[in-house]
Amino acid sequence: MWSLLYATGYLTQSETPSGNLVRLIIPNTEVRNIFRDSVLDLFEKKIAQDGVTVAAFCEELKNGNAAEVERLFTALMKNTISIRDTAVRKEFKESFHGAEAITKGSKKQNPSACFYHGMLLGILGFKDGWNVESNRESGDGFYDIAIEIEDEEIGIIIEVKYAENGQFENECKKALKQINDNNYTADLKEDGMCTLLKYGIACFKSQCKVVVECEW
Image (cartoon, rainbow, N blue to C red; front, side):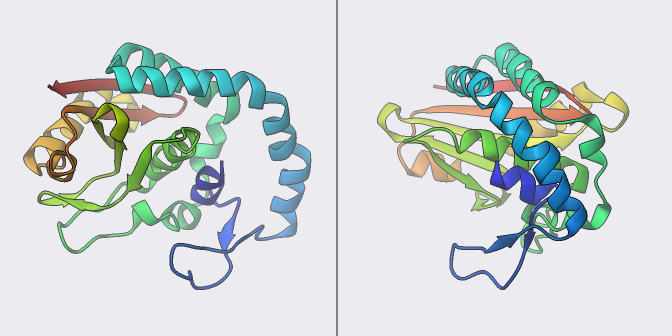
């Protein structure tokens, strides 16, 4: 939840981060009113229902079931986030870490993709026992999201793309190619993950396409 709200600009950074801690604030009266009238009410009403959906999403992600991951992620987007929220002001989108240019590795994520990146991080934070990392260096570049499920020796790499005008298939292919070309699974292999799942997820408005490659 907090990653998503930060990514979309409903929360902003109030001071320089201290280690891994960042103090967040509601930026203005307008957003405070949105929190009071919409955001908190929305999560209060949806949390029980979406908790079941999130648990199912994580299970299917672990199982490599791309079709179900696609269906469940789409359901979460449609149930909790209005399409207009993907059109937040450009400066809010770019305030999310994933939108920043990373000089080493020459990766810069499309600001629109950062919205979905943030939503995925919020969803994945639901799972106890999963080590979730974002925008870290591995192989020859910087992945979007990596997950280690140590007790099952499963490693997951997720690359998120923005499918401008619904070009889902092309963006999914680009995502998988980027994972493979840059060897993003290198750290997962070094950490002893025996099953590797590589996901390309392309999003546009409240729709997505998910593809997966598996290494056993």
